[in-house]
Image: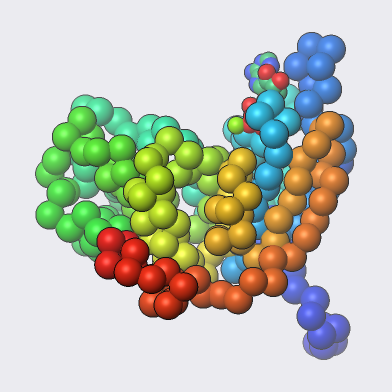
Length: 231
Ligand code: ADP
Ligand code: MG
């Protein structure tokens, strides 16, 4: 087998020439992107710039888009709203749609990972916004996806809860090694979490820039001061 040139890896996701219009409005006008295994890419852009539209296309949730998308089957999506089923207990939300031996144990382990051990029998309505979003993250993780697509996952949370979730994301990312596309309108969040940032504007990606700040930025970092006690 021929050796791969150094630095070249097969992307976990590629999109080519993605276009989407709603009536006369062109929202995506030819988007190309590739995400490498284990890479976290932030997608920035103003409100209405088409971030969610692109994410839904990449997730395979939009049959009317044009362009080529190549992605793994084992992907998971986390939306801004947790989208838990209110009539199912937390554990059943996490294991939703999964069958086979060990599913319950895996779901319990995922809950433990997001800090919700012991809440498995709770109903979604009994959870805070942050806890519900942790469950949504556990539901994604238990599928052990190669790729996570997240649409402003922490955008509806208060500032401290958001920071905790960002720390959780960094920890999980280090442990699991998934690749992720993280839609956010929060530049700070992009810098805290991503290896690379894209900017969507007028239907196109106008910026593709690596983040070279040192990682990991965890609560162990002295830069967090005494705030780390609350993370
Ligand atoms: P963002 O997530 O960046 O805020 P969206 O992808 O949600 O932006 O929306 C981009 C544009 O596409 C907006 O102008 C929005 O109104 C429009 N749009 C999104 N979904 C639909 C839809 N199903 N029907 C009509 N217009 C839509
Ligand atoms: Mg959106």
